[in-house]
Length: 246
Image (cartoon, rainbow, N blue to C red; front, side):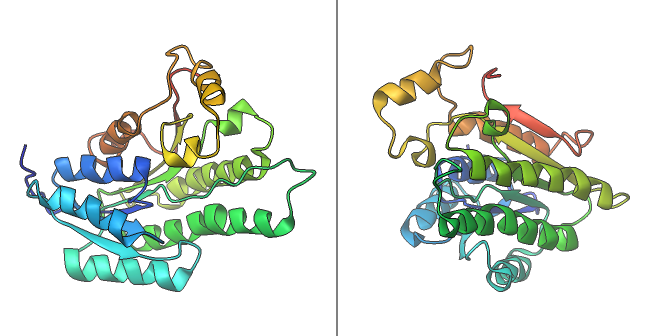
């Protein structure tokens, strides 16, 4: 179906990735203009833009190191100038190096913290300053904060931090008519999850939830679309999207 513009605008960090792309395309279906953020692969981001534009939507690709406040600020500036404002910010960008706490080197740990935790702070700070009334800020956590799987310690710590920031920011924006929520997917069939894992291991993980499959990017994108639109009474929450995994 052709996309009917609504005048609303979204920034999706990590918009060229698996879940990010699904979110960009789903929001565009609802008529939002979309800024597709990427950091290293312009071609992949442009594919998302082209897919949206081919259906009558409006989208731009915007690069930034998510841990650099100047570069991320420039993305927000550009979106306001070119697309007319900001109504929704969906922060999917992240990195997931794995390793046992006893063995991970500090350089890897610091890199995870910079991208996942500092990046969330930067994006949330800018979003809190610039999202228009009636808008939504949506952070990403992970079901691994509850599953407590070995080797996920530093990654899970950053996601727990994102959840805490979300809860507090929702209260700090009292009276602004801006919702702030966190979505916590379970294992989802994207390169971020499957890369480096054997088929047997992936099948084992898929069998951990009652639905007995991995999540799909569209499973998550549907919830994002609802939080970005009609679910105005859902605020300051962490919502797990994992097929019923513990």
